[in-house]
Length: 121
Image (cartoon, rainbow, N blue to C red; front, side, top):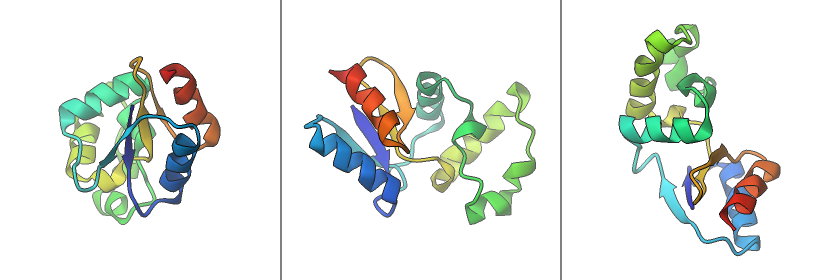
């Protein structure tokens, strides 16, 4: 299992705490220091069963600077969104946890983190 975190994020800290409490095996990816490329984003989006706009942090200054909230949310513009997330990883929702069985979740709640734990055991 891998977890994409921002070490300054309270939701990431909560997810890590739960993983540790459950003695889960995982690797940490500090995605701001080691940003996912476009292919990795496509793969995680497939695993999440979400679109790039579903994992975008619209409250970030970068989002406002790009005007991303006004971008069309459709397949024709999907690549534009993915390029923006790859170029500006601060826009990626966190934490993202990938399970050993191919599933993934945005682990912002304990329920979401537990759902991955049950799939990885």
